[in-house]
Structure formats: structure tokens, C-alpha cells
Length: 233
Image: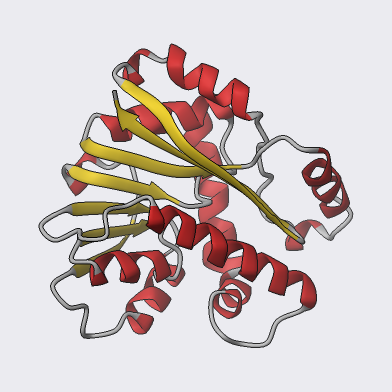
């Protein structure tokens, strides 16, 4: 069950992405002209999304996939085009509305169900694969592992997610961000080293039988994130 720490941070994330940053996020995830800084974030996110998609089967026909923190839906669309039945969840209703508007009508053999809510809601059912791209980076490492354990209970194939790696450049960017007006700040990220995170995953009873597999760090300008795949082992 989600603990108080998770619920508190989730509330802040919902407020930020549903109100403060909705317009900026809409532009960032489109072809609209953005600043050079945001261009690097866009490029980094595109690279990361393609990386995570490359870790999924090329043919997802008959598979259920949870896009946990789907944002405006780009990854969900690509998974559906491979034949997946995608459940795309985000805490921000505004982003879900944008995702619904952008989703193409023809998805081949796949489908997408967009919904504003909690990625951990058991009502979403069971999945073959789960992808959580840049949706867990604002949570404390212990809460991230709790989320992964909760998702693992309902997942049979793989769990693919990203975390904020603890690096000097990322620490500097985070420090600089504290000088922006409070109203413009996104919820703080929670950097964690790969070694520490893997240790927490290995030690968690809820993830017994799961093991880290592929990983890749992407650092492009103001975007730094690391993908990690968990598989049954």
C-alpha cells in the first residue's frame, strides 16, 4: 500500500503538472519551438523513450502494458502501434486530456485507455510489461522500491523505469534550480546512485524473484536520466 511519503509527494506532482506546468509540458512534448535548454530536455527524453521502447518486444500483440506516468502519451502510442493493449495512467488530468487529443485514431491492432489516477491502483489489473519513464524521479529511493514492488505483484514480464542518477552535473543543475521563483520550480528530484538503488531492489522482499537487467544513462544538456530494466529471474 502507498505510504504517507508517497502520497504527499504524489499530491505535489499532481498539482505541478496539472496546473503550473501544463502549458510548458504540452509545448515540450510537441513540435513547438522551445528554448535551447528545453530543446536539450526534449532531445534527451526522445532518446530515453526510444531506449525504453527498444527493451520491449517488437510485437506486443495480445500483451497488456501499463504506461505509468504517461504524460502526453507518446510512449503509449508507440506501444499500441506494436499491438499492445495500453493502460496509460497519469496523476495530472490536464495531461491526460492532451494525450487523448493527440492520440491517433488508427493504432493498428493496439489500443490505449487513458486515465487520470494512481499507477498503483489494483483496479488497473495485471500486465505483461510496465514502463515508468521519468515518473518516479521525484520520489525517495525507498518509495521508488515500494512502488516497484507493488507493480511487480501484477506484472509477469518486465518493469522498465528511469531514475535520476546521482552525478555531479545533475547536483549542480538541481542547485541552480533552487534560485528560480518557488512558483516555477518543479517538485524536487531525488537522485540516487545505481549501486544504492540496485541494493535496495535486491534487498526488498516484495521484489524477490526480480533482478536488474539492462540499463542506460542518457545525459543531454539539461536532461539526465537513467533507464533500468527489471525482469523475473
